[in-house]
Length: 307
Length: 268
Image 1 (cartoon, each protein chain N blue to C red):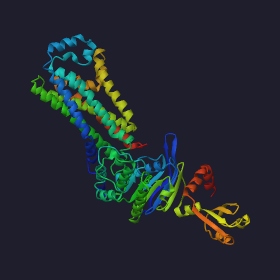
Image 2 (cartoon, chains in turn yellow, purple):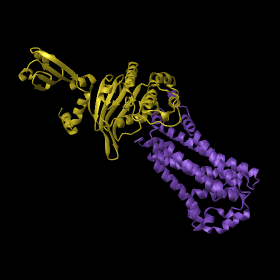
Image 3 (cartoon, rainbow over the protein chains, first blue to last red):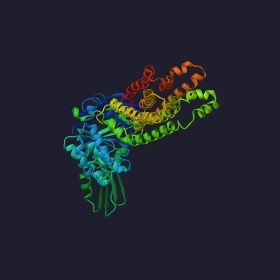
Image 4 (cartoon, rainbow over the protein chains, first blue to last red):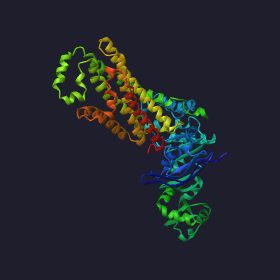
């Protein structure tokens, strides 16, 4: 059994003179929820379209469930569920007619999944497609991606257009699919949207993956913003050089710092003073995200070479 | 796992369902126009029309084939089969053909079909087949109206000749529509498909119209419009060589479409 369901090696995609993917390496394991993160224009959709054989690689290699997208053809796509990033639907057909048509394109697979999923997301199947709001169209997209219980779900910005309540419902659906044995590959430009469900995350920037890690590790690396208020002015020396502490600033009787790792040393040092208030705020993973984008690519490459 | 792909003609059926409304409206319009033109033939005196044609410049008479307008076969050729039929049907075929692949690719509505377990070539060919059936049905409407009126008004045109004209008209228009679909499928741009196919149709018409006037035989030799009308099907019936030439256009365009569409990047 092949345990890597998506593998790209040095994937390059040019659109004329524009290089959209510049040697992208990815490995997604069977049974995981894998987040694919990057800002708009970083190459997320291009990667996904290569995986679905809409685009053909300029160089490098992509493999999905053991074959290249082109060689896998329809038989491979029968095992996938795909939610496009910009779902375009029009016409007089109702949502139900369109979904039943899409099930027919799968030889009927998924036709029994339409009703329950539509009900779960509150999608009215009798409404014509072209009158649907963006959110309702996204629901149609979700239903068609999940209805046939595919082995691998490829979801491009799946939470866009869904209100917060439905985002929650959607993430539950993703988790259930994973628990049932499916692999989920989902892109987003907002990390907080998927950090609750994703196991591992790859960060893409300018067509290359700059980091792949556990969400938890990323979270730890992002750290917490700590604020402590004391009864009296404090001596800055007390908190200098404590492990895991960065950016320490002391403003009169208030200490602010960025904590990465365990808070033990900080708490023990603070305990010798009278603490009147404290707060520890998870730093938005977006901040970490931004750290990656601020670093020029050449820097990072140079660092990778010296490793 | 073989059951997980679409049954034959699923895409075809989907397109036909979407086309129903437009097909009904076009049928009604074509039937009305054909009825109107052929229906007034007995009321228009032959002398009136000959007199009218005599007043026109010779070049125009030749261009529109009005020299035989005094006979029923000539009249039907000059109006329904040689002018309005090809123009209206070509507009339909080119607009529909370019929309069914390039247009729906550009607006994104083809994405879910192309990522379903259906091969690219099959998506293209079933959509093309739907276009051909659409055109066939509309040519059928024109044919039925013409045959019925020929019988009702007791016009001196053989039914077999009407059918021969319809066969040529069908292949001519299927050719234009397929060229539009193919150019759109190869380039991914509907506008290019529209431009090339419409240009092809106009040039074919112009060569057929100008050729005899300037006595340039090569013009009518290469014009599909001449392949359709030069043999005067409503007078003489089927010319198999001309029909074969007409049929070559959609066949070649289909091959180009499949090769181009299966090789390039989609939805870019």
